[in-house]
Length: 187
Ligand SMILES: Cc1cc2nc3c(=O)[nH]c(=O)nc-3n(C[C@H](O)[C@H](O)[C@H](O)COP(=O)(O)O)c2cc1C
Image 1 (cartoon, rainbow, N blue to C red):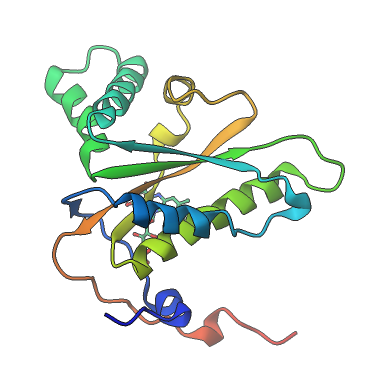
Image 2 (image 1 turned 90 degrees about the horizontal axis):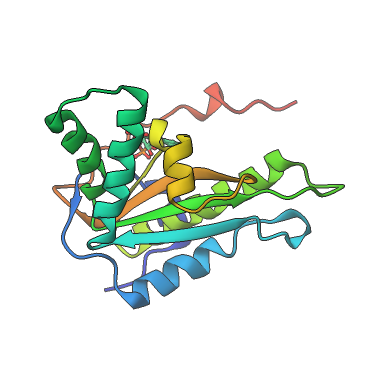
C-alpha cells in the first residue's frame, strides 16, 4: 500500500469516537512517538511526557475515573460508577499527553503547554497516516486532582489530553469543509 503523503494526512485527518480491536503494534507506536518528539519546542525543554494505557491497565484508569466521580458526587449508584469507569475502555490504547511545565526566563508555561499540544497533534497525524483511528478527549477527568495524582502527575504537570487510539469502527466520517476566508485575513 503506498504511504500517505504528509499533506493527505494533514488535510484528511479526523477523529474516530468508536474504536476497538487491537492496540497499535510496537512498530506503530515507535512511529507515533517519533512523530510526537518532533513537535516544535522553544529552548528544547521537551516539556512533555506520555503514558500508554492498554489492556488491564485501562481498568485501573477506570477506577480512578470512578473515584473522582464519587468524590464529586458522593452516593452515586454502582451503575453510575461503572459508567464512569467504562470510559477508560473506549479504545484499546489511551495515550495520556502530559505537559511538564518548568520555570524558564524565555518560555512561559503557556508555550510549554502549546508544545505538548503540538506533540499530541503529531500523534493524531501519525495515527491517521498509519490508518489507525484516534480521538483527543479531555473532560473533567483531565483536570481532576484524584485522577492527576493517581496517574502520578507532579504539581507542575498538566494533562493536555487523553488520546484514544485503535481500529476505527465504521467508515471515516465526512469532513465538513470550512471556508478559509472566514479564518484568514491579509493584514
Ligand atoms: C483539547 C481538546 C479536548 C477535546 N476534548 C474532547 C472531549 O472531551 N470529548 C469529545 O468528544 N471531543 C473532544 N475534543 C474534540 C475531538 O477531539 C475532535 O477534534 C472533534 O470531535 C472534531 O472532530 P475532528 O477532529 O474529526 O474534526 C477535544 C479536542 C481538543 C483539541
